Amino acid sequence: MLEDLTIKDFALIDQDYLEFTKGFTVLSGETGAGKSILIGALSFLLGGKADVNQIRAGKKEASVSGTFLLPKGLSVRSDIPEDDEPRNALEWLNVHGIEIENDRVLLRRIIRDTGKAGAWINDTPVTRGDLAQFSSFLVDIHGQHEHQSLMKVSEHRKFLDARAGITADVDAFTAKYAVLVSKRKQLAQYNLSDSERLRKLDMMTFAVQEIGEAKLKANEDTELEEEQARLSSYEKIYSDVDSIEQMLSNEESGVVGLLKKIRRDSMHVSELDKSLSKLDERLESAFYELSDISAEFSDYKNKLVYDPNRLQTVEDRLSLIYNLKKKYASSVNAPLSEVFAYFDEAQKYIEENGDGNNKKDALTAEIKVLEKEILAQAEKLSAARKSTASILNNEVDQILAKLGMKGTTFAVQINQKAGTDLEQLCGPYGKDDIEFMISANPGNPPLPLAKIASGGELSRVMLALKTIFAQTDSVETLIFDEIDTGIGGEVAVAVGAHIKNLSKNRQIFCITHLASIAVYADNQIKIEKSVSGEITSSNVYPVEGEARVAEIARMLSGDSDTSQSLEHARSLLAKYSGGV
Image (cartoon, rainbow, N blue to C red; front, side, top):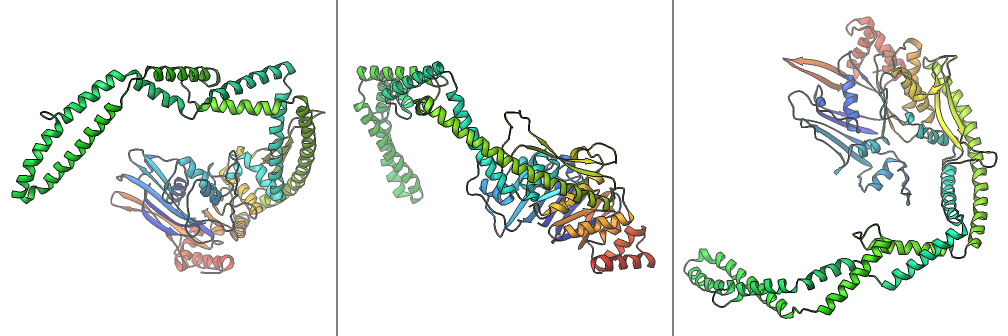
């Protein structure tokens, strides 16, 4: 749930801070007042497109931040498969190592006039993609083609499964299907011709023997190369070290000897002027440090020995490693770890293929059993989906008729994955491809949901689906824009009633021009444009009591001053939202 929103220098908004509660909140205002700017700011916060044109004229930076209370009852799986996506906001935060306090998160985003943008979840910087992915668990914005989970075909199967109550069964199916895929890969290895299998087995056996006899050590190649460089450059190293030692320790011209003399004078002068004592201490420190360095260079030189036999041993060992990399790594410059990896892979192949047909026959039998079990489970899942789809079609059609879309037909399209008479193909979620379809006019064939052109129609379809899926969808905050396009009268009243009903379990924001929808709201926010000198601003503020009566009256007749419109507004509020 969105608890508060802070907007600064975004489009026409100078600075606004708004607090929100649960239930149904209406955003109203005259045409051109900037209602879309408020939604734009929220969309920006949730990972929408960032553009320097969003920055208020004359400012360097626009920023939007919001506090969200996470839904209750979210759980986190202890072991999430690498190729699986987080299932809720709390799981997403856990995967990305972001901690929360009091079940709340702070989202913040900025755009600077240089084009540079930034985003944070709590104090953690995130990418725009991360922000959009995380916020999709928190908010759906309907009316624009963004933040619409129901517009993603991949989500349709999840919604239908949740409605059918088979989500846990599908998860179990997916896990068993992964086992089948793994065993099929193993069988593919066994199905190589015997000659090919034996040839590869011999090759892997030789590799294991050759690598094993080498008795390689981790990072051995790097260490040997360093030693080779040291041994082959013996004369140069000795000459340079000897020169360094002479320059440091020569009694007459060495740095240490000269520094010793300087120290003697420094000690004397610092006794005469105490302000020089710190400089004397630094000289003393430098003297001891250089004396120690000189001693270590001397010790290194005394231990330096040219050993041609060791050099030959090192070069022979490097040659062996070079040949092993040439055979078993991606290149001779590859890390030695690739040779170890090949060794492990070869050992695994030998273990899996060493006893040939015995394992092949056993694996084939296991796969047949798994395939039979998986197909049986897929049939059950498909039957549950088809049964639920029929119910869902009727429910959506009934709601759409009340929302001014009589004659519109909703259909859950379920197609079986391609197969043959001998084999029914399944995927990780069963044998069905699922997509929500819609026919906006009688007699027209159903089209994919994404093909609906009208923002108002799309929003009402989403409203119908959200009403039905309210108990299974974890997204708590819904924003409906353009939902009143092309409707009025009884249909608008029905839309308001549906939103009100949906807001019992969700936080709903709705931009509307219709008083018959606005009167159902628990809260109302007005957006108003003002001009001061040459500066235009959009001001956002809640309206309550008589101020709300006046706003409803304006929405009814365009005039908030007449007694008739005020009385009408007051009566509608009393009827649909318990008065003012």
